[in-house]
Length: 185
Image 1 (cartoon, rainbow, N blue to C red):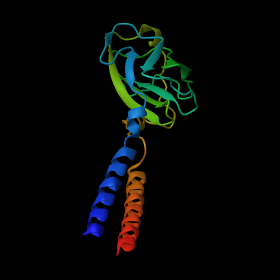
Image 2: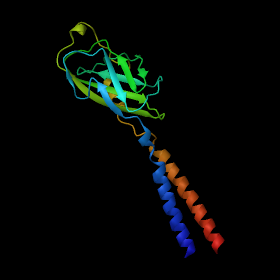
Image 3: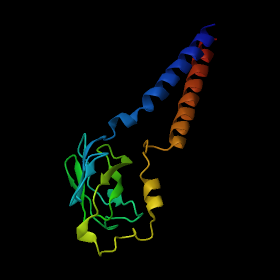
Image 4: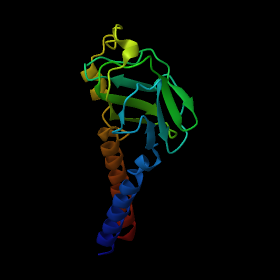
């Protein structure tokens, strides 16, 4: 009977341990505002895109902010450097194109070292006259569909890491339970 109780208690503690380990997403940065704002309707093209997070952002080469237009073209330089200033990340624009919905895709290195990525949209209500004759960038070899796919929200670590951790914890719990049960016999 004591062995059964030891196994049950160990299994419960192991399950609680797995639940406690699976909580790192709480530390990821969260986007709290943007300029232009999510869903905004603006008449003039902004000179830059600024994203503001709830905590400082890490500067690094992996940070990206990409703007795709209603014409499927990319309006940020694929090599454009993202500027980080505390909780703000921004990228300069050289104007936009036709009126319509624009998508901002971002991939930013969070304060906890994880990548935070997502997308948001705004609407330009008038064509940008500054770019009437300019060909916008097509994003190099990366299509706007690829950019949008990369901008899907990330939950941090891959699933296989959590499964492997759970298996190890259960194994340790079983070894402990069997040893405690053997000592009691």
